[in-house]
Image 1 (cartoon, helix red, strand yellow):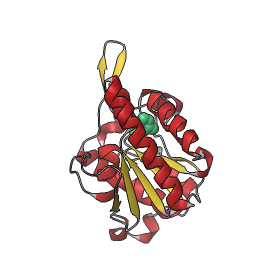
Image 2: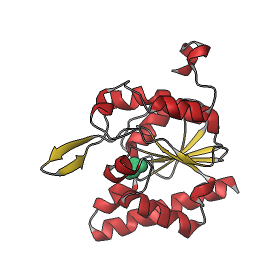
Image 3: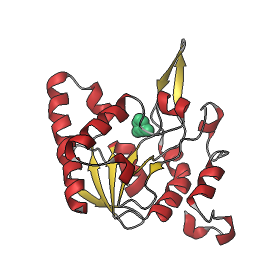
Image 4: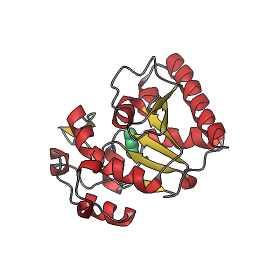
Length: 204
Ligand code: URA
């Protein structure tokens, strides 16, 4: 973690951190991914929205939440009045993890060790953004922020404390909602919208 490292190793700005992350090889995910996908939005945002890791589209475009999960996230944000340009949107892990299947690259969730290694970058982002509230989308994001890997079902909609001290609102990952059968997806989407609205209210 940051505290245990020499001050001179630390990037002095978000731009420097982002530049350093481009050549990260703290874990093996960099070997197959196209590029590091850094966060984006307002570096002074009150709200940090944290996903798991870039998907196929994000890996190719170099931006978070530009694929199908991002579309759902942005749609629900618009419904509750959260402006993506006024947030900081990022991921617990900054490289795409996948297994090739024919010509397709099938998404894989990062494991605990990959999330831990990538915390170096997440901690830096959090230091520079210093959000008042974080919204964890799914179990990997929740684990990356809180260190708690308990199943999400009992945690969703509640506030936990990040390891660096800030409040974390736990919610579903939009990809999870997209994979559910229609009736369950409808319910999970409503819960997701409720959580995003709560985040919005907490910052008002
Ligand atoms: N899923 C995530 O968790 N993050 C992204 O950036 C895209 C999809």
